[in-house]
Length: 255
Image 1 (cartoon, rainbow, N blue to C red):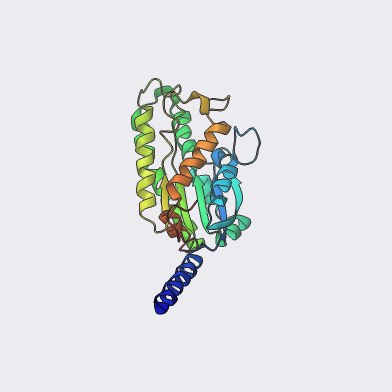
Image 2 (image 1 turned 90 degrees about the vertical axis):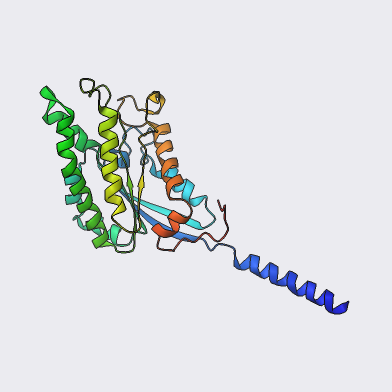
């Protein structure tokens, strides 16, 4: 009987130690956000970086993360060719070199460029022709980031469709955006520690309340929705992979 009590107490102590050992050790992560106006935060009434502050708050709500620091290199109007050049700027390279995650929003202005250059006779064929070059430039962007930091996770955010009024003559705007996003998803799948985040259905028909007054960029609620989609996509096992196991979820359902 006495031996049984000692055994029970011993097992109870082991259980307590196991639970203590399973407690997550919060880590700091450094995130570099780079890209176009969605990263800069055009339409954000607080001028604090669009989706970034919302995502920062969500990441820091995790038991596994103490501080999520963001550096924002968003620049409105950027296309893939321009972003590729900006990756050679010394302070950008320095931040990417020490990043745990690099987040990218790019592509919307590539679509706009097709519109501007073919305004008088715009057809779906123009977008199909440009899509190949878009995919090649995306691949070059991800390759350059990987060359600058072999351990960082890469998150590529897809494009959405605010172009309905512009594409009214083609009536193919949704299909164009869907196809370009498939190209982005395919390119992302060719790289390790890389995730693609689809946001096109956030801004589908009936989502007028998510747009800024220019009816092109997201408003505060729109950016909050983007941050939520990014967080839902990368949370859990995906975040472990992106951070090369720097962030480890010991307990399931941790938040």
